[in-house]
Length: 82
Image (cartoon, rainbow, N blue to C red; front, side, top):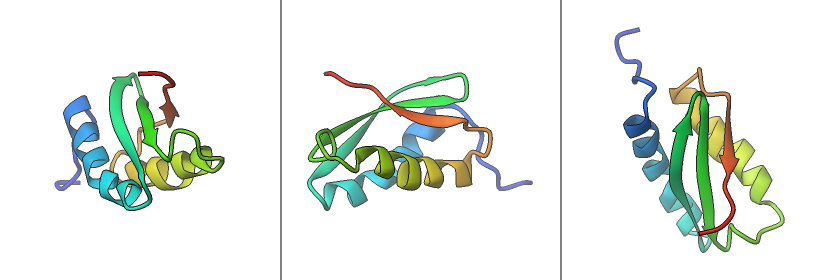
């Protein structure tokens, strides 16, 4: 597949930057923390950090979107704290 994006930290970070405006529209935000193996670690911020639906947003929006670009991604995890 010639148009496949390489699975690396810089490209995962770039894809997360594309997702940010959607979360910011609802008063939230997301920050890339690290790529550890096939797991992306992020920090939900703003209204997303205390939202009861944060885990659903992470799984069904962020993770699903990233897996479309990076099928080898296992999961996206939220890292608590600053």
